[in-house]
Length: 308
Image (cartoon, rainbow, N blue to C red; front, top):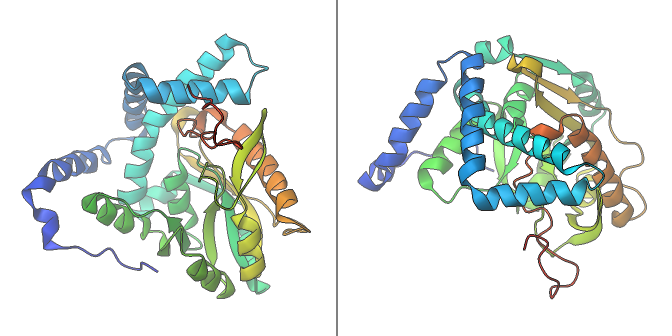
């Protein structure tokens, strides 16, 4: 488990100087009022939508596949809002990594934290069943104000970003575990402790079942929540975070532990999990990460990509 951001003198190599300059600019923007940040982010999001052709195509295609009942105009409106929210998410991450605890507390609200404490007091680990909402980084920082946990993450390929990512996330977490380190996750849950877990992205064919996700009948979905809950003797608590109306702050909601989870088989658990994911996304569809190629893995490897 990673418990400290390790700095190396190699990070000062000239090849990293452009990255450090970008970090300097990002650190400056965290001094701006939140309302200014969000206006700037909205404009950046519109710019990305205009020039990031492949990403725009992916998000538009996801919305078409998930919400065929919407009119094209409604989907385009949601697409525009989603890119605006994506631009704002840049500042969510900046704030999560560099705001002081005092400033975070001035811009946050939490409900349901008693469910976490009651579960831990009962001797069970907590699996926070989250989705890739755009303000998720800030959600973790806020959660850590009352109950630091263990983050599950993918190490970054760029060493500077890896250092910053670990440093930023450890401001609200006890440690970070690679998403591939199942054994360490189980140890944390049996401690008992809190870990973050997401099952709303396409991680490939391995350990996946093909089940409905919104209107798509066959989305590749991992079944790790069942495995973790069984091996870690843990409870699963759905978790939601959003940027509030008017961009005045952030709100998180922790829901009660799921009854009868895990169930009799992992397929039924995964179907139930996707329904919960849909419910969480529906709380604020515009703030979900629609840019991910959620349906890239098809049941038949010879099938044509839905993104072509």
